[in-house]
Amino acid sequence: MDDLRRRNGERFLLSLGLFLLNAVFFTLALATLLLVIGVPVGRLHFPAAVLAAGAAGVLSRAGSRRQGAAAVLAGLAVLALCLAAAGYVDDWSWDGNTYHKGITGALTWGWNPLRESFYAFAADYPFLEHCTESWYDAYPKATELFGACVHSFTGNIEAGKASGLLLMAAGFFLGWGLLLHTGLFKGWQSALCAGLAVVTPVSASQMFTYYNDGTLANMLLLCLMGLLYFTFCPKGELRPLAGYLIFASISIGFNLKFSATLFFAVLCLTFFGFWTAGELRRGGLAGAARALRGRFCLLACSVLSGVLFLGATSYVTNTIRYRNPVYTMIGEGSTELITSQLAPAFQSMGNLGRFVASLFSRTNTSLEIAAVEWKLPFTVTGEELNCAPSCDVRTAGWGVLFSGIFLVSAAVIALALVRCRRSRPELFRLSLLLSAMLALSILFIPGLSWARYFTALFLVPVAAMLFLFGWWNRRGSRGALVCGLLLAGLLCGNLLPNAGANLVLVKNAGRTWSQLAELRELTQTQRIGLGYSGAGRFEGRMFNIYDAGITNFFLWYIPEDPNVKSLFDHHPLYYFTQLEEEAS
Image (spheres, rainbow, N blue to C red):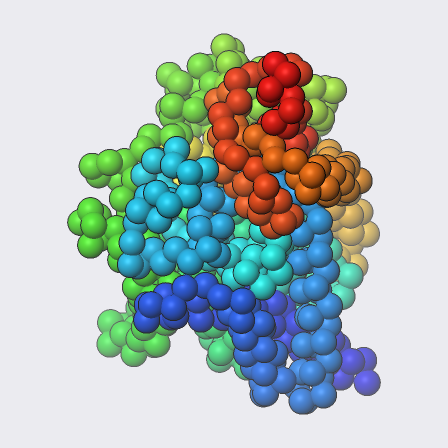
């Protein structure tokens, strides 16, 4: 009876996670397909995709129809909660209120990237005329395309950033279900490890913004789940699900950031090399070719989907316009953002030195650090607590406790590998290979001292927890259980500054909507001047203005003036009334 209950719970979790993943993937696929035939984003895109995801969940062969329907209903509740949370807390980030929301709003208002450039479209909208950077056209657009579909459906551009929350939830439920499926871990252990793999300082800081580094981390995690399943359960019953996780995660991930192509390539090639070596040992060249043909086709189709189908709005258009599918990343027209935005203390270092210095220094958002601020692991300063919640921490962005957590986790994994060297040789070899992959990535890939570009590091303590819980479940070692729980507690403590900042954001979000309501009421009696001031021209905020029904204004560049009224607490717009202007 307990085994049946576990299997039912496992199927429910997998169906729930798959529905949430499909809600995003189907939205992107439908929107892209319609753009190809000339149909811009519309109000029905999102509900149609959710309906298709629900139908796929109910008709799935995994479990009964009733169980599938229950998972879909639970998924709809999670979907509604994510939309409500994202729609209520306004994006407080710089990038979110510039090109992310600028592209999202343009797509909502009818821009088709396959038919015209962003700049040709923006020429008809004065508040977008300053958007001349090359990335508006060139960057991958999965976050913005999903956001536009939700924006069109809800009338609230903030709700469009729910993709991060949805994919975070999808990764949690799928990870929980797959860990249960192994039979190696208890339910609470599976939930705890899945949750801490998905909710990290980077994803937590970005969950209410259009930043997508946390979302990319979750896509890499889903891909890793599928690759691990094929490695250890090559004939398992969940092979179709594992293959789909690889396909969907690569398709979506490629269209979040150009750097995703590098991260997925390193991950998939590492596993494919491991599989090839194993098959060559067992069956020679001919046997390896037969055994790996299906997996090779899966990876190839995933890449083609990410580049040629979902990537039509970036990789394809960039190739046509610039003869470079990753225009702005490499080659002519590339933008060097990593090195140029590092603090002076890191400028002269190599990749390894930057990583070590960042990991073992104080958490800091400043770009003016002249010398590395080394610190002892597990020590924390008040300034670090203030910096940690930023969505773009440049130095030691893995969290205020992470340096110590990393050292403890590395020691646990090293001890576990010594113990499993003979009893689990395949696990031992793969763990060594993945460790080498991380080390080589640090050496050769620039920018990994910047935590949001190196979220794979968060999986090290989760792997250590899995080793410890597995050890306790097999041997009954009380010390392993205590160490696993201690590590989990440290990871939760590492998240506290980010969680606290999010609570403040939720608490203060009502102020934004009160400001918009007051401004809408003001414009019913008089016309106002509204616009940007200073260096920050946050065109994304203008879509909030239109969403609120505020139209009785004229766009104006407003000189910095302490007496002028502001709108939004972070990255504001400014306004004045005609009467105030005449009086001055």
